[in-house]
Image (cartoon, rainbow, N blue to C red; front, top):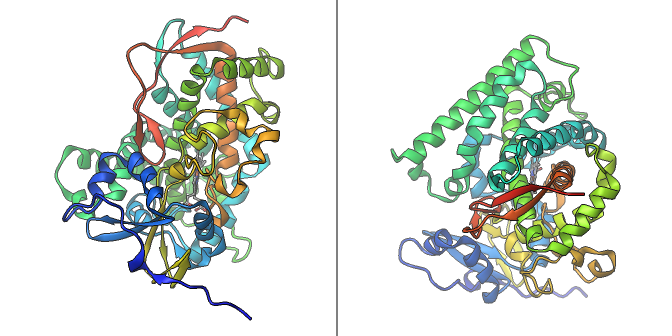
Length: 452
Ligand code: HEM
């Protein structure tokens, strides 16, 4: 006989302490987002947080996050955070729901296949070498900045490989950093603040308009001149046809997908790479293992796609860096009544979770705050609950760029380590800043040629 699950309504969910009148917990979240989000697990598997007057239920257990992303995925849509990104990225893959999402995901998935990524890898390697070659012995390089430039350059050249796209590459270089700087704050703030006549809003709006208009012009020119037969993302999107409906993407849809990939793929990758060099500097033994591995697998030649699977030490380091410095906050909204744990939530409830906080849960990871790439060695990783590690999300909304970023990041790390030894510059301790991921304020490091 089936036993009915006992459940209580959302009103019995414990409320996080520290709410203040009118602002609720928004002040705590704004002042120290990462500290606030990691503190919530102390209060339960689901904790109510008030953003002004809007209640948001933060899920702190890996099992329940998995329920949202996989088990009961049909009962959720993307929610408030993504509504706020819609003016920038329209109905691109990260923002859309239901049939539109399914159709676009079907069309874009082949653009991130193994063969396509192999095709993009030469350019990743060229960009990594030109970054490493531009440094001079003794120079202090801000790794945050350098890796942001590398990630943006790599995305821009994956999208626009021909002369027609050059204005778009320029526009991405110039405007994307301005947009990324304020993206999370925009998404988390009430809409009326967008209209305040302050510098941050003016810069943001000008950058968004400029980027959109250049990408639109490039798309129109490409369609008019029959720009096909290339393997850049722009050409692939223009030529894409849905296998079920036989329809292609409109110009606006192509623009929205390009914008989405820029927003989703630049800062996340840059932060992961920048933290990697910071963490390696604090773990000389691990760094030495990686340098030996690169020497053995690659030697003096440029890094290629075939080297990537053999650079297993780099893979473990990346797994660990992404665990420690992951995606800050994701949101969903219930579309039907949903039971999560002991509670039932009505349709329209805003639910959130922090992959950053989950990945630092001491109940899931031994010495959760320590950098220990060897926890990913085959003999040790069996003790880690596979469902509890989800740096790229899970289910039908899992990051489409995960293999892209493994390749891009592995190539960059191997290229830099083969040429340079990086040491933290005196006088600055990098601090975490919450944005889409937990990136660093800055990571100044001195570069010296590596003696073989
Ligand atoms: C270290 C780097 C990255 C991390 C940690 C990361 C993380 C994530 C996560 C957690 C999601 C799921 C969001 C959700 O469930 O709401 C996601 C989605 C997405 N990511 Fe990434 N990402 C990274 C790099 C990239 C790159 C390089 C690209 C593109 C080249 C990309 C494109 C996307 C897109 C388009 C989506 C939306 C997928 C969908 O909803 O179908 N990401 N990413």
